[in-house]
Each structure stands twice: as structure tokens, then as C-alpha cells.
Length: 227
Image (cartoon, rainbow, N blue to C red; front, side, top):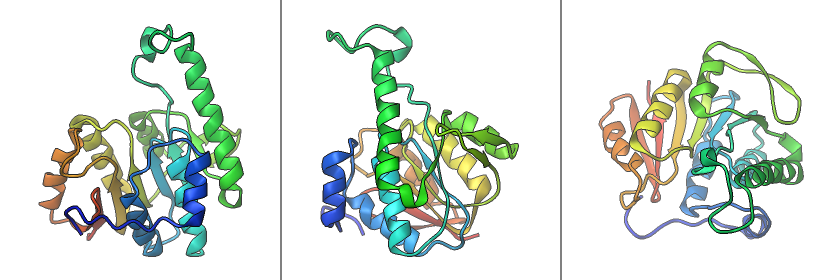
């Protein structure tokens, strides 16, 4: 699926969720989430890189419920935003970067408790590189809700929505590829052909990779691992 005819399968629940849960949703991703989760190859975990206030996290758990899937959802986000390293306020406002970070993290926790209580995601407070190091070492991690989770093993679906530069997206892809099982899916946010971000250049490389097939472009890219 490509071009300007984007498949949008928004429904009443999604619309209500988007009213209450902050976040930027490319509505075409819904069709990709639906397809990937409906066709998950196993009950291995679903991983999300970048979660912000939890909108896409809650959408993922919704589709897992819709298709009666019991996969765990494990997210990775440090909530370290651009400009925060300098400290100070957001622009010329009186809102501190540190308070903004805390507010977004607290919003994430509140939102998943509200909308994903039936399959409460595990949230790892790390950047993706550190997350995959923990995954590789099969570490036991205490998540933001104080629960222990044993990381590692195969992944059935990964939604990559972290740093959208080519370099970071490529590292996220290579790290995911090590653990994505045969038949598993990867969806890249902000990867459309008209995206202003460098991750769109990575899509050209993956489409030429014999290990992957492009399943949907709506307008972001959803791939399935063939072997």
C-alpha cells in the first residue's frame, strides 16, 4: 500500500483514546499495528522503542486484546528530550525541562494504568542502546512501576519510534534484527517517503535485504522477517 491513499482504521475507542492520551499518531500506523498483531508468529514479547506519554503503547495493547493475544509489551524510553541536557526552561516559559520530563513520565504511567490495565506494559527507563545491552545480557530489570522483568530472548514485533536519524534508526534495526524471530514484524514510525527524518533512507536498504519483505507502506514501513 503506498501513495496518498492512506488506510485509516480509526474507531470509536481509538478516537476517545487520542482525545485523552497525549502523543503524535500517524493514523496509517493503525493498519500496520492491526496487521502485525493479528499475524504475530508467537507469544514472544512485543517491544516498543520510544513511548513518550504511552499513546502507541496503549494502542498496541488494544490490538493485542482485540485479537486475544497474550504477548507481554516491553517499552524503552529514557524520557530525555532535546535541549534537556542544557537544563533551564522550555524556551522563554517558566516550565523547567526537569519538570517537563517528570510530567511526561508520570503521564505515561497514568495512561498505561488507565488504558492497559488488562495487559500492563513493562517500562524500561533506558535509551534504546542500553535497553538492547540489557536484553543481550538477559538482565533482570526493575521497571518504572517497580516490577521485575527478565529481558532477553526472541521478539515477535518491534515498533521503532525513538531517535529518527539514520544512524540511530539503523542501530535500532540492527539490534532488533538480532532477536526478531522468523515471521516477526518491525514498524518504523516517521519512515514515509516524504518524512523529514533520516530514517527514511534506511527503508531503502531494508527493502533490498533478502531477509525482509515489505508488508505495508501506509505511509510508514512495516516489514516482516522471512528468515
